Length: 404
Ligand SMILES: [Zn+2]
Ligand SMILES: [Zn+2]
Image 1 (cartoon, rainbow, N blue to C red):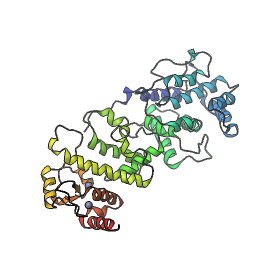
Image 2: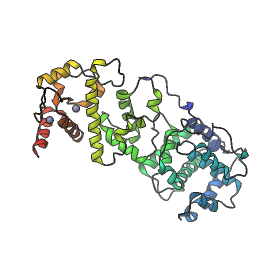
Image 3: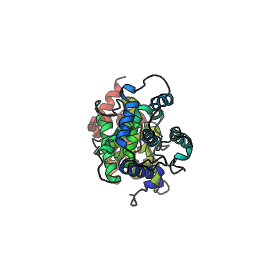
Image 4: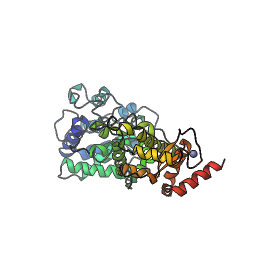
């Protein structure tokens, strides 16, 4: 549908990420401060490791700020510069830290603010950030920094020559493995828990391919509720998220609003309520069914006014819907519910095919169901695709209804 590529560089995060990699990793110079000397990154990482990790890790209840003030007292300036850059990259792309706070992290290391770069092209909030990662990212700051140190340490020690594009490919690979395979505990800067910074870096490294969703539970909830809308779901959850977005956007998207598609689609106000806080498999299943039934019903409601409402592409012919209701006598085929030719839904036996071939619906594909049976039908469809066939579907619905 879209022909012009989305311009990510309109937003500072993406530009800064590229500049940061070029200056810090490739040129080995400070990005966030005005120091211009080349940095000995290997030595600085080693020093940080000694102060910040391992035996020197302070697992007391003291505040992060107090801990690092203690751990980094008497630190050589070069180590401070490197740490300030790492902390900058952690804070830079997120919404739930104010630009002033992001700046203060850098300022604490150096006397006077004149040693920091200036302006809102370096310290910014919405809309230039990539996401709001929620409270975990801030509470888990220590491990997030350790995880970030590991990624940077890896690319710094591996990168001989190369360019930013190559670096980003490497970073995406490292982060993808960290999210899905974990990090071996023996590795340098190995964080033992999920770190959102991997998701942030993954997205920054390849925003076309990876969604800007930082929270692990959000990823799980979205996939669980919407997996079924994709005909051939990828076994890679990252790819699957994008597949889901493509299908849902085509169904719900509003024409030319590319920002809505690429920036926080799953968090838009009509999509987020469908999956957020659906924590148990049961809740997720119910939510899937509600979503499908709502789509079917809205598709029917909108048929008379297709041109005026551009929200849905899934359409069935109003004639077919009428014909199905007439054929079935406005009666639920499963339980026999009938109410004055009203309160009857028209269910598509293979709802998925509507996403792919919206035009080809036939009368035989449709049956009337009462609202209760309709929700149950979608529940069973999620369990087993054999309920796309009329007989097994009616059989299971009758069975459930007669169990009472
Ligand atoms: Zn019924
Ligand atoms: Zn249905």
